Amino acid sequence: MIDQKLAADSPLRDPGFEFGVATSSFQIEGATGVDDRRPSIWDTFCREPGRILDGSNGDIACDHYHRFEDDLDMLAELGFRHYRLSLAWPRLMDINGRPNTKGLDFYRRLLEACHERQIVPNVTLYHWDLPADMRGGWLNRDTAYRFADYASAVAYRLGDLMPRIATLNEPWCSSILSYDIGAHAPGHANRAEALTAAHHLLLASGLGIQAMRAERSNASLGLVLNFESLVAATEDDQRARDLAHAERNRFWLDRLTQREPSSDLMAQGQVPERPGDAKIMAEPLDWLGVNYYTESQVMRADNRRGYDTFTKPGIEKTHIGWDIAPQGLTALLVEFDRDYDLPPIYITENGAACDDSVNATGDVNDDQRRLYFRDHLAAVESAMENGVDIQGYYAWSLMDNFEWAFGYSQRFGLVHVDYDTQLRTPKQSALDWQRFLASR
Ligand code: FCB
Image 1: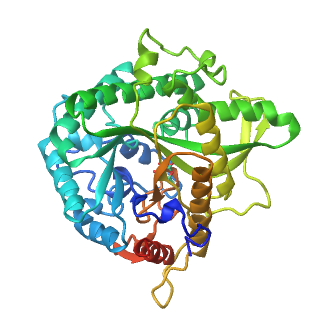
Image 2 (image 1 turned 180 degrees about the vertical axis):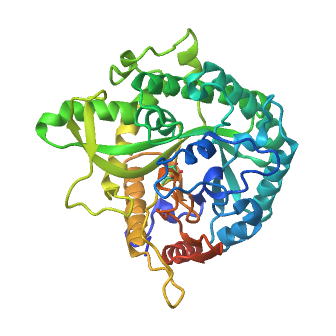
Image 3 (image 1 turned 120 degrees about the vertical axis):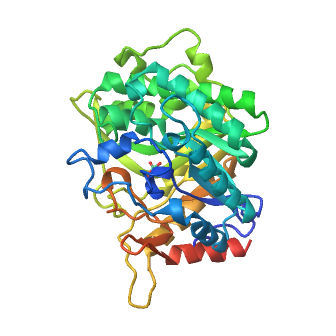
């Protein structure tokens, strides 16, 4: 089913094309209070009233910390040979900047368990769980240097088990969504702060790449960005659309490639740029991760951003309310390939939230997700036909998990999780993947 639209000789049918699933530490691990883990900004954010839709938190989540062996068996059983996961900084470094042996032991066991099952781990170092005690969070330039210390320590101690490493997941979310829109931790609403955070995040990534290269010259190092397809609501909104597109999408690639900025975004805040920063941010990457979910309409607006985005009536949406727009993925990939000199691309996240439940016969019929995967795989194939160098695709997510500000109300998994019993049930989409991967 999910491969229905692929050509018989599609490169996605080639066993050399990587297929995997993705997760992140805070969303699945639980066990927040064990083995000397420090609280993260998401632990504190979850405790602020009104921040999380269902008032939930990550204390237990999928209890993956204690169940990782079974979860990896399940992943291997589905036929995936690649797994994108993240490490929790608060587990791995203590408050004095020294590695925490218990955290290192946990991730060594987890990574070894991947290799034992012939699953290649693709590790992200920062998927938003910043230690809560880092003074000033991403507004503090020092956080970038502490990140590089963490990257260096992890590359030194666990690098033998990590062939592919990304520094950050979606710095747009950790800056604009967290410091300007305020929907993610720490939940501020201040545009100048968001631009400062963005600057420090990109600096952290560049410093992290340098630190890891010094430690492990053979690791393949990347960064994961998230893009959204943006369309002008009317002809008069084209300028607003271009501004939004520049901020949401092109800004990050401009900085990574030291290109002239696509907008005057940087002029909007007092960006704390110091001599040499631009070059550090553009430290060459071995690969670029692309996360893609949806498309929005853009309308000009008299607010601090200069525009508003909204979903389009009449377009099919997933349960989280996001428009389904596979053609947007192809268009973005082709545009970026044309305009920038980029390293090979991996689609590091793509998936759909559906209102899933286990029926009387024990099945989860998630037809919308199955079609979503079918159409987005075709979109990836089409970008490749247009010359974009794409090496792999990771579905979000292995299993239902803590969906940030939406708590447990949104299910993105290929595998259903019953949060009362922690029972895992593969959905029909997971069985599609199993059939497809077995056919290659
Ligand atoms: C991405 C995040 C991921 C998950 C999906 C739905 O922005 O990286 O953790 O929440 O969205």
